[in-house]
Structure formats: structure tokens, C-alpha cells
Length: 140
Image 1: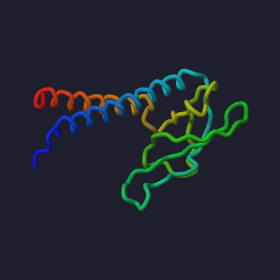
Image 2 (image 1 turned 90 degrees about the vertical axis):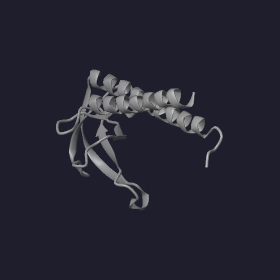
Image 3 (image 1 turned 135 degrees about the vertical axis):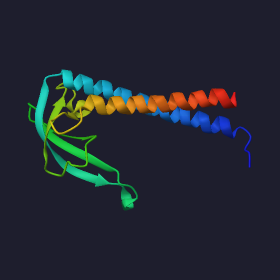
Image 4 (image 1 turned 30 degrees about the vertical axis):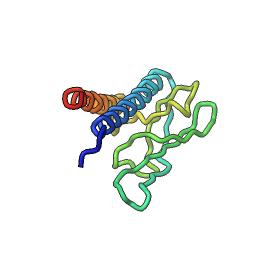
């Protein structure tokens, strides 16, 4: 069954979705680069790992905590490998001006945070460009 305008809706939606994801991860990439350039470093730990509800997916969310030089306790979520367990020590890089927004795991044993977010930006950007190309070649 052919829905009138369905191609426009599908490809337009995919372009918007992957374009938004690429933009979101690009902003996080800039924040991570700012944190790595700043002089804030601290030892932190993995405080909890959350699973998707009802175990519908193997996706996990890793939360870390560290103490800033002025004594504030900061907790944040970041990308991490499956090998990280609750209580594992990590090195945290952050911008002292805004530790809650800029904290990232930067210790050994992890992928570079710049590489992680760079791959996400490139992948989502390529997906958006691919859907745009298919849209232009087939629909228009």
C-alpha cells in the first residue's frame, strides 16, 4: 500500500533524526575537548550502572562520581565500556568552571572521549547525508 507523501515523511524524518543526533554529539564533543584542555583532573569511581527497563536491551548507562578541588561531589553519566564495574576507579577530566556539564572519563583502559564522540558525530552525520542523498535521488 502506497501512502501519498510517505517517502517525504520517512526520509525527512530520518534526515532530521540523524542530523539532530550529529548536532547533539558534536556539542558534547566540543564540551569534552574543553574539559580535556582545562586543568581539572580528579580520581573518580563508577557509582552505578543502570540497565534498560525490563531488560529489553543490552544497553547500559554508566554513572561516575568525583570530588572537585573545592570539595564538591559531582555525579555524571558518560560513555563507558562494558568492562567497567561499580566501584572501579577512573580518571575524570573536567573544566573547573563547570564540572557538572564538562566531566568526562579520561583514564587509561578507556577509549579516548574525543574518539568516542568523534565516531558518533561522523556516523550520524554520514547517516543524515546518506538519507539526504537517497531522498534527493529517488523522491525529488
